[in-house]
Image 1: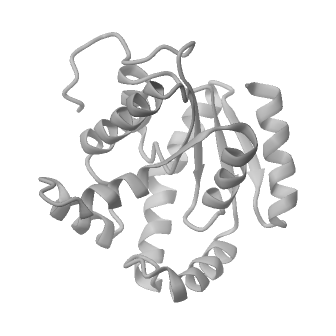
Image 2: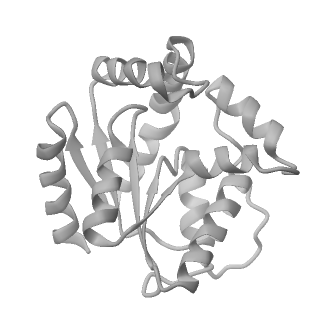
Length: 204
């Protein structure tokens, strides 16, 4: 459970627009987010990148814990991820940036509920729906150059399993609120992006 005791979220939806970007590892979330940042002035917050930066930050009390979780394909305790996201949103608001793509989060039901209760309610969820064999191929290809410790076949299989078991209930939850835009990703980057742009136009 989160340690926050306030009943008020940290930000109001009038102040901050958050779009969750979800999809299995290798579905192409990062590529699509880059395009949206360029064309629509979004700030791209990748939960994974924030955690990796914290893991490498000198003197971080969470570095080793984050490292072990990432290596095992496990989900880092939500208090850490929520605190990093809250700080990143605050920093960007100071420079008048208020539209956020949050990529790779929430990955579990309790994260979704805690974020919307304690930080801000999301506008909608972009769900990149991609067949597992396509994602596997992409990740193995990326692993040749990425230097990431989790781009190997054992870690990838663990990540698929984690995604299926914990993230799909999140998608189902947001679908009950009619907040999910499902986009098929086994197409060209350009075709996928056209669908993403339609979603943004319709909902923001």
